[in-house]
Image 1 (cartoon, rainbow, N blue to C red):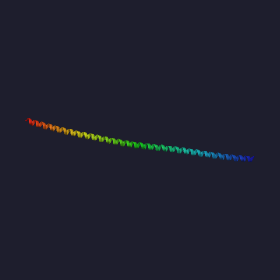
Image 2 (image 1 turned 90 degrees about the vertical axis):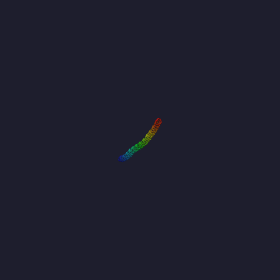
Image 3 (image 1 turned 135 degrees about the horizontal axis):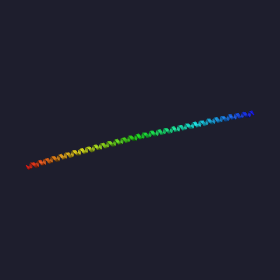
Length: 118
C-alpha cells in the first residue's frame, strides 16, 4: 500500500506543480493585459492632448489672421475716410475760390457801371 501512497503523493505533487504553473501563467496574462490597457489609455490620453494642442494652435492662427484682416480693413477705411476728407476740403477751397472770383467780377462790373453812370 505504501507504493500506492507514494505514487499518490507524487501525482499530487505533480498536480500542485501544474496548478502553480497555471496560476503563474494566469497571473502573467492578467498583468500583461493590465499593462496593455494602461498603455492604450496612456496612448489615447496623449492623442487627446495632441489634438487639443493642435486645436488651440489652429484657433490661435485663426485669431491672428482675423486680427490681421480687421487691421487691414481698419487701415483701408481710414485711408478712404482721409481721401474723402481731402477731396471735400479741395472742393471747398475750389468753391471758395470760384466765389471769390465771382465776387471780384461782380465788384469790377459794379465799379465799371458806376464809372459809366458818372
